[in-house]
Image (cartoon, rainbow, N blue to C red; front, side):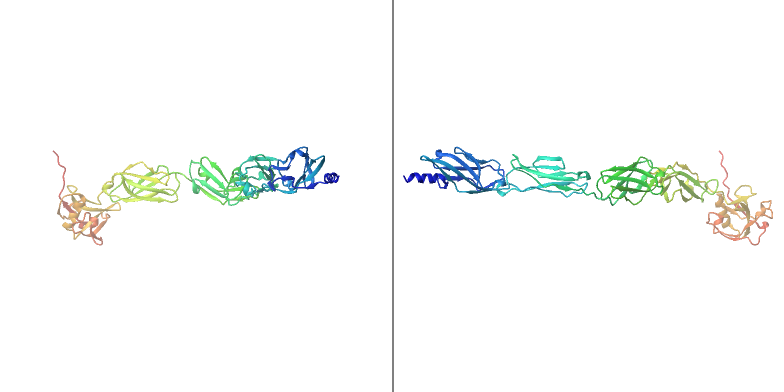
Length: 499
């Protein structure tokens, strides 16, 4: 009779015993499946099985069943136990297990978004998180968002590249990291991104061809660039000397071009450009543009003192191209022989002087070259003749005998016979192209005598007989002589031969 009251007492109050046990892990990661299993020595006698967390019932089963947390979360951390009611003889007995503490850890922390944009630059948006060492092989997927737009969905990379970020890319950015099954998914905090616009600076105007040197009729490209500046930039080109506005372009680039299809002399002047991206206008320095034209075919002019070229003359060769940008280099030739060159630094022509001999009867030409292609003139043929003699014999039987007269400045005069000898006559014969000297007769043998007003140029001729002309001999100017004292000469004559 004492056993029955004891059974009633055991039934009324649950006891903790080793008969009922609980099996579960102490640690888990979020997203894991956690199985809590309670069992006894004779599970078929369990009529009711209840699972508890932190003293609160989770689930009750009428047979032996485990309790499963299919997708663990940190909030599932706590103290777990279970309670079983089993039949003991004719009464029901309640037994409890010990409590087991479960800690559910974060698989990875919420991601942080990193972005530091400057407009126009390439920007990498990073979604940063980490996995514990013992779950480092867990595959994660990354999604990126801006305001209400999805930028990348379920990508495998934790980075998102924006090739050239613009002012319109400003907004609220955030990212989301999830496991492949999406059992664990976490969003980072939203970050407001304001894309910084860099004001334009370092504006530079250049040309193609370089240096502001353009060839007439060819295209010229004006290149405006900035060293710094982002976003849409408005470029504008101007003439500083005339105030003319040439053109305007707006584009998302740090460089813009304006082409002049065919330049001429009217395009010569000072140019500059401006750039503006809404943060203030910036201007380049002025660039001087020069237009160069190739030299035209030059014209050669030959200038001599008289009407014809004579041995002993100084001839001027003048070469001039009517068109062409200076400086122009002129080269002078006879036949294919180079004579010399002259440079015209400020335009116009150039001249070259040549002392003529009989060998200079040739074809002459000139060339004009300003570095844009040499041009050759037409050839001019020059015939150089011997000069007329400055001495003559008159009133004799032939040209190699008679009264001696010399020419000065277009006037003829006589020679006094003071000291007149065979050496003097030999020079006269040689100059006239006659034969050998024969006599030194007085001039009065060859009448009529000159008029009184006809001059006497030479008082004494002091020839040594080797000179080619009487003018080469030393002379004493007339100081006391009359025409009755005029000198004469007889040379061997070269007469024509007839057959």
